Length: 208
Figure 1: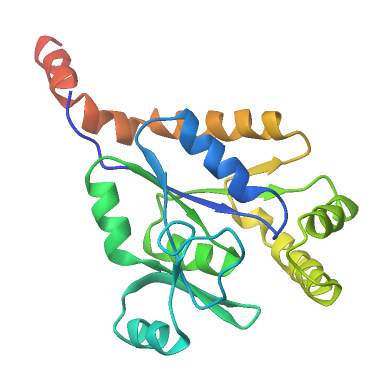
Figure 2: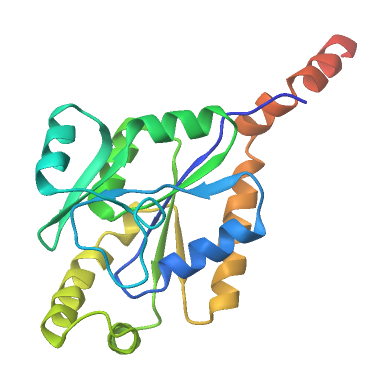
């Protein structure tokens, strides 16, 4: 059994959909999969840790790294930059570890253009009212910011048809099982399995 190149997954969702909680649970259920840690210029929220939730950098540092082509993708959301390190993606996938990028539709478009084999998943809440309730309940934003996020969600949702899979996070456990099914199915693709079982396949070819 050989070592296969890891698979790259994109998971996008409007803010407040429960994406981060689902990704955390997904990574705890499967081996050889991890979440990419993005760079961002936004302020750190209570309970967040630098290098764990995000790599928090200044606007100046981000723009310098952007000019140096450090990022595989980047986007500006609510006045802040977000970006994914090209080196991190390349190194992680080369070890056979699958990698999840939590990025928005802008970043997803950039990744697809460069890596067409990426598996992309869009997550939605059960409705606009549920999204507002979740944004309000988490107590991380003032009313003005909540409205901004709801407006941004309308734009984000308009891009769901660009993705391979759609998951509705109405019931957390159901949504998690659907995500697990997508990842497991992606790992069984012929292109992936060929890398793992080339010696076995060669034996069949020799006896054919």
